[in-house]
Image 1: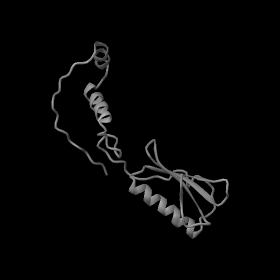
Image 2: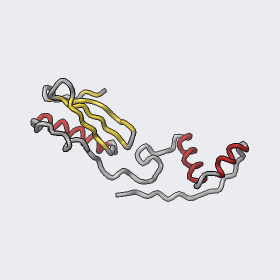
Image 3: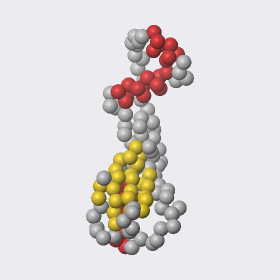
Image 4: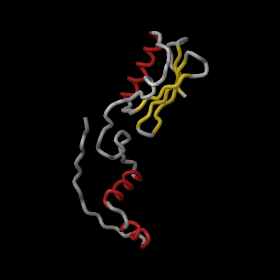
Length: 132
């Protein structure tokens, strides 16, 4: 499901240095460029849609089925479910899982597109997760 935001447009005129004006002339969509830069500079870019007006559509755990990991015990399965639920609440797009060197433990990264929102780990010896 996508959300589309419609904005009323207002013309704004301002002066820029000659070299910036020349650089702007070479862009295919000057308005989009200027709006994007201004929103980022003013801290108004939505962290979820990154200014696109579209919310990411779903959370993936891409490497879980690709790996030949043993079946999770019930406690580990509950912890993995908690990580995925947290990812959904954060509007994340990906949860990456990796086995740790300690054996029966997993490290996770919750990401939204390219940005890492949270890193942590969980194991079968504890019902708590560790955040890094």
